[in-house]
Amino acid sequence: RIFSNTDLEKAFAQFGTVLSATVFIDKVTQRSKCFGFVSFDKVESAQAAITKMNGAQLGGKTIKVQLKRENQQQMNGGGSSPASPSPATPNGITPTPLGSS
Image (tube, rainbow, N blue to C red; front, top):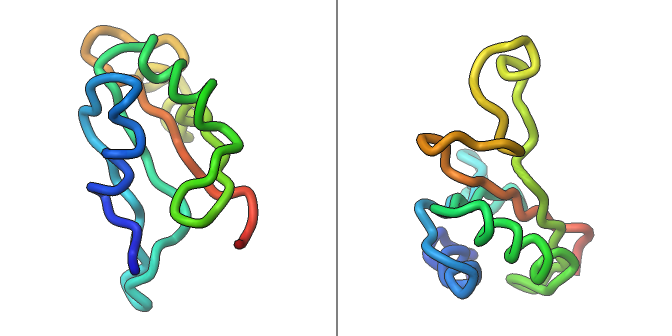
């Protein structure tokens, strides 16, 4: 069974309003790339999810949950940082597996 966007959203909804939840799928194999993004409407929700879900089991794997990393454009001065979001920036976290199960 493929872990879906809906599965990811349901797993993180307990922490607050999920604006988006995306599991990245390999276009060739149609299998999960074992990472995704979840965005919340509030920083507090994202922080609670990080605290409670980091190291938890999800979809048969132990996951690592952290704030979304800055991309190259943001590091070069463009865009806003997820660590200090503006009201227009969703509060994103990145659940990724620590290892295979």
